[in-house]
Amino acid sequence: MNTDSTLLRLREANPFPDGHEAVADDELFERITALRRAPQSRRRGLRRPLVAVAVGLIAVAVLASTAFAISQWLGGDVVKPDVTRAEYREAQRELALPPGATWPVLHVAPSTVTSRGGGGGFAVAIAQNRWECYWVRTIREGDRAAGVRAQAQLESLLHGNVIVAPAGASENWSPPADSSHPQAVYARDGGYEWVRDTYALAAAGHPQRLAQRCVANSPG
Amino acid sequence: MTAETDFRAVFSHLGAIANYARRRGSADADALAAEVMTIAWRRLDDVSKDDPRPWLYATARNLLLEEHRKRGRLRHVPEREAASPAPELDELDPQLNRALLALRPLDREALLLVAWEDLTPTQAARALGINAAAFRVRLLRARRRLQALLADGGGPTLSVPQLDVEGS
Figure 1 (cartoon, one colour):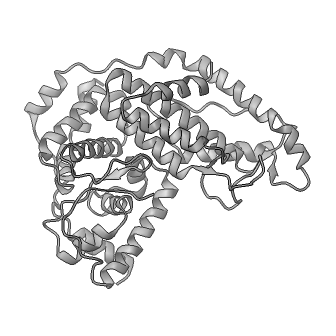
Figure 2 (figure 1 turned 45 degrees about the vertical axis):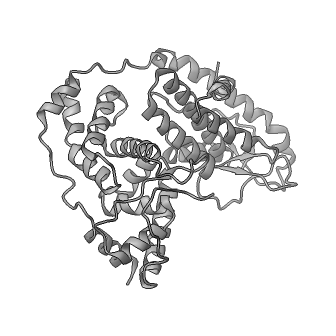
Figure 3 (figure 1 turned 90 degrees about the vertical axis):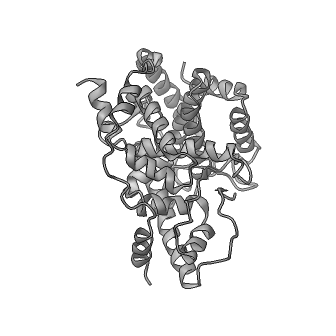
């Protein structure tokens, strides 16, 4: 039995195979649409200046890495700005942002180099911050379902897109070059555990640390 | 186009969401589906007009997890791993039942979103909140594992279907 026949067997075992039929429940539709809808995000009008500040911060971060990058120019696994920008764009296809959030443009100075994977790492950090802030907002608004979704997104990011550098690794350690998806690198200094605990606290009804992370890592 | 018109397209998936909840063992699948639609209406700006299904399944899954937690069917509350509702297994043949339960929960959910809910891998990835590449790896792993388990008689015997959480 190959995997296709396995999937076929599973499809045939579907206990409710007629799941996609249209259901005419006009009464329910009327009841739902009689409810008030949630107001649109108040942050929408602030998006443009926030993006501008985000871009500035990212540019500073890239420039800050330049000294090391140049020192590694001949021997280290560093890449030029066009590669970093491509990594950043590619990462956007794989990472989700919460409703209302947009990807800032990544400006990388032409004369700089960045560790390979840096563009993806920036994208992961941005996605993480946006979801954290979204989660804080859902907690404040009492939107439990959206909060659970935000938590799931953050857990997924931590699990799939964050990698902790090996013990004893250099400060600029980067993931293996064959990594197929964007990854942010955490130093092995307890930071990963701290973030994980922050999420656990928020899920348990104590979002203070999460709110602090949102503010600390947000542009502006 | 009015919000009601937009919502009508979203609402057309009510039956599919109710059946999803039913397959995952919801105590009141119709009520859960109605709640999903109510949330969708409230947050209609967040729901993709082109393809609302991933958003709807993600929301239904979150509500299912909450329902299972309240019913005490979670063995432990996850801190770093997303949980996945176990399928409603009463209707399945025992061998397939055991094989599905032997899969890692998120692998199982990946498989069932494609096989039973008829989502594309991209849609299912969005429903699970993971990137598409990671989902495809997970799906391939799940298919191979299920195939091996079925070839081996369905895996270990598990007495009570329950909601699992992904192991770390």
